[in-house]
Image (tube, rainbow, N blue to C red):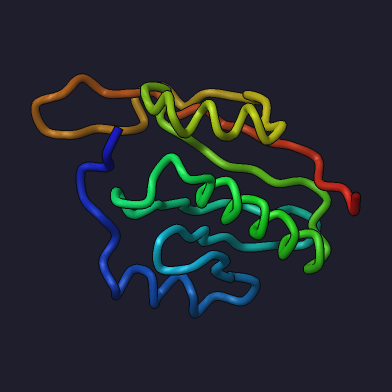
Length: 126
């Protein structure tokens, strides 16, 4: 699944202006997240199409988890479109489990709404 509209530079800048927000990874693959109290939220994880299937998304996710743990998070949360099989497989392999659902959360012109799956995992200092 490809998101219908990529985030703008202004949207990224706005998110990064909030306390607790951080980026991990590199230009080829990165994670944007935030920590509030003892909870981390993965806001987005992206890999450049030319660099997919090389483990870069997993590395960016792992770096996000490490950074979140260092900032005091005990649990990481994310949401993913139910029809985004590659992302769901990545998150499941990393230990995330489905904790909830937002029916019809993702809407695009000309397509049926897609549910958002809420996923979480406990972070540990292993």
